[in-house]
Image (cartoon, rainbow, N blue to C red; front, side):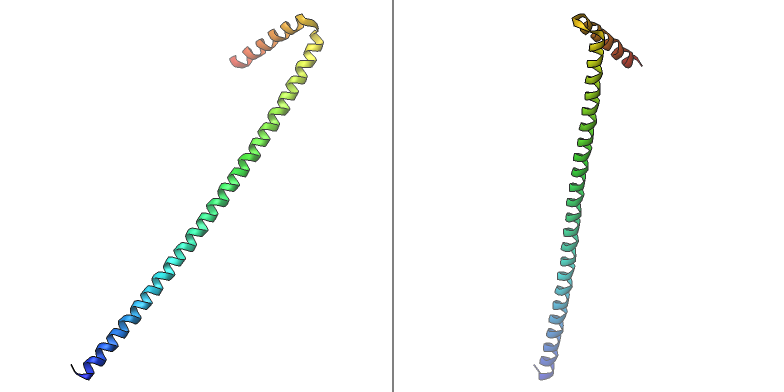
Amino acid sequence: MSVQSEVDELRARRYQEAKDREWRAKERAAAERQAAMMADLNAAREAQTCSKLRLQADMAALEQAEFRRVLDVNQQKEAEEMSQVGGAGGAQALTDVHECQALTNVND
């Protein structure tokens, strides 16, 4: 083999090695970008999940507060009706009134 062909072969090998290094660097950079993007997406999903849970907890608290408020009003109204009707027979009359109101509400 001639000296010139050896030099040409060495140059070709060095050129190919440089191209291989360049390709590996591009692949590594693409993989790093992909990993960073996936990390950002996972963080955004986690934040969205936390936000949704906080919103659900807030809504549940509001619903519970509304329920308790309505319950208190109903109990207060029932106590007032009991005091107006009075006595043990009044409890039966109150029950009859509530049943009548419930049936009316269901039929409407």
